[in-house]
Length: 228
Ligand SMILES: Nc1ncnc2c1ncn2[C@@H]1O[C@H](COP(=O)(O)OP(=O)(O)OP(=O)(O)O)[C@@H](O)[C@H]1O
Ligand SMILES: [Mg+2]
Image (cartoon, rainbow, N blue to C red; front, top):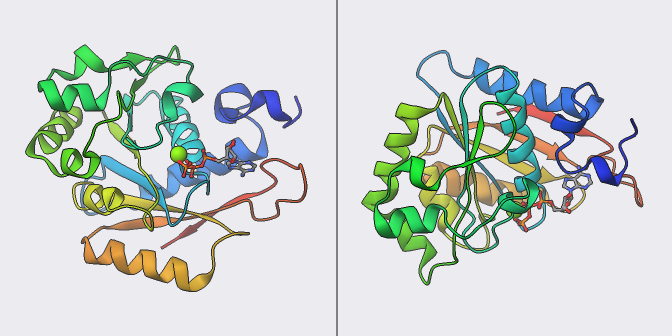
């Protein structure tokens, strides 16, 4: 099978033996190996700017974890531009924002993706104050519940330079993966983001360099991982 458009963006599901899927497995292994001192169970994925590949990385990493038999929960915490429900072809009528406003149980809002061991908590209806919702005590409680029910929780977020949401979440998660579009983001921008993450006391698990050699219409040409 070629790496052409129809197999995207869930390439780890459609073509698990492709080189890109292998790269997601390397990312998974690196996250697991950063786990030697304390448990890394909640991992947030972010980037400096928009469209660097956060959601694609989160979805494929989630699939890659589920393939090992671990119970995986993917939370779409990008309340401003939710996409995970689209990637998995599910509804966004109820989700994280509904759970937080009603203090619901996870099982009331979590959806089956059709992929074994992988559940999705979509973002839910766009709320008036996303940052406040993410900063709330209820969000902490929800993450606590998720820790009890899943082996790993992966969290998609908005870009760091746009809003404070990702910084808020970083402080609540065990680790952070930073996705950098190699063609778009300059070093000083990446440094600024790193400083923001440090300020939030985030534990950097590593950096994913996305689109290293993107040329014209070539999709997913390269996908590299570098430890922090
Ligand atoms: N390595 C890649 N090669 C080609 N296309 C890619 C790659 N990674 C992501 N894309 C595509 O780029 C677009 C943006 O990716 P994605 O939605 O994952 O980024 P994002 O960082 O979540 O964006 P946003 O800031 O809007 O949430 C999507 O159409 C996705 O399919
Ligand atoms: Mg996104």
